Amino acid sequence: MLARSSLIIFLATFVLRVLSENTTSKIKIRYYVTENNQGAIVEINSVNKLETESNASQIVVIHVLEGSLPIIYANDFKGFPLLRNLELPGCEIEEIQPGAFGDNALVSIGLPRNKITTIEDGVFSNLTVQYLDLGRNLIETISPHAFDNMPQLKSLDLNNNKIQIVHREWFKWNPQLSINLAYNQIEHLPNEVFYIQNVSRIDNDLIFEHLVLAGNKIEEWKADFLKGARVRSLDMSTNKLQCLEGNYANLFTALLTDIDDNPWDCECLLKIAKWAVENQRDSRIRMTNSVEICNSTGQFPTMRTLP
Ligand SMILES: *[C@@H]1O[C@H](CO)[C@@H](O)[C@H](O)[C@H]1NC(C)=O
Ligand SMILES: *[C@@H]1O[C@H](CO)[C@@H](O)[C@H](O)[C@H]1NC(C)=O
Ligand SMILES: *[C@@H]1O[C@H](CO)[C@@H](O)[C@H](O)[C@H]1NC(C)=O
Ligand SMILES: *[C@@H]1O[C@H](CO)[C@@H](O)[C@H](O)[C@H]1NC(C)=O
Ligand SMILES: *[C@@H]1O[C@H](CO)[C@@H](O)[C@H](O)[C@H]1NC(C)=O
Image (cartoon, rainbow, N blue to C red; front, side, top):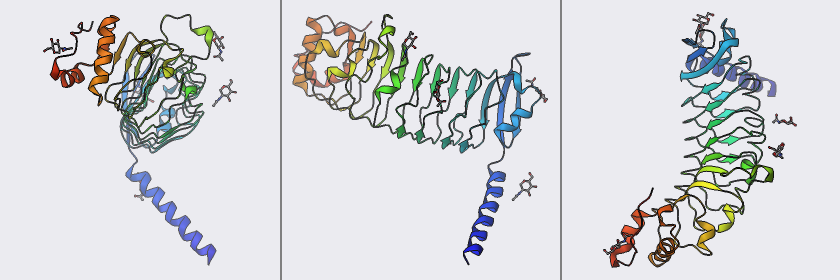
């Protein structure tokens, strides 16, 4: 009985696999090779079929134009030693297995508009990638060590996901990183989250280029989360900030801070505005729309325009 039902399940799975292979089969890929800097478009039914192209070892760019790739398997992008740019936008990717992007020279990986939910260790860690775009996915969980040993990472785009927890470990390898965490579910930032643990790297003037936390659910912004980090621009707009406690000098350390479009308590915003003008930081803090709402009494000091 048991054997029979397992046989039926086996057969059903097999038929489903064959069917789904056919329905999801064609993947349209554009690639470029170093040799003549020329591109070609191929239609194949699995990414690793690309390896059999005679010029696979010269491929520098792979761009999936059409097709569905629910799982990126560990060896899908092996066999392209010169691959620098990999673009897989809107390919219905749900899962990426560790080791998917090994042994090549990848500089940028674009995975926007997919259905990825989790980033495990070993998917991106140890890569020499500079630009990583994971925007507009369904990411809820990223392992603390998911971005370990990626010293060349310059831009990490995680906009429009479902991230609640931000780990300090993500950022410790990366001087001069831009991080986009806009439109996630972040309510709380751990203390010193952007603290560069490798102190020998702090000789650079600026550590973080752009830190985008707009469109989250942050209610409380304490000075501590920026401690030990230097930031060129910090975007805290469209959160749930009503008031700021503590020493403003420790909060507005970035060259430009956007605090606009929060549900500000007007008394509190007035205090910030006055402090900003008195301390000549006003050209460095953007709050135009919120001031417009709060300045019905005309109490807000005239601010210098932004650079
Ligand atoms: C899938 O496609 C192959 C050839 O492309 C064909 O031989 C096979 O019958 C198809 N299978 C189904 C289940 O449609
Ligand atoms: C790569 O080789 C295949 C033959 O395997 C050829 O059809 C294709 O045009 C070549 N691509 C480029 C970009 O030279
Ligand atoms: C990354 O490299 C380190 C040291 O070379 C190694 O111990 C570790 O297992 C690697 N991690 C992954 C996920 O490949
Ligand atoms: C810290 O930075 C130095 C110099 O860039 C580097 O040699 C060292 O491996 C780094 N250590 C860690 C843990 O990041
Ligand atoms: C607030 O209103 C007063 C009076 O209308 C005006 O002089 C001032 O420039 C306004 N402040 C800002 C920051 O717009």
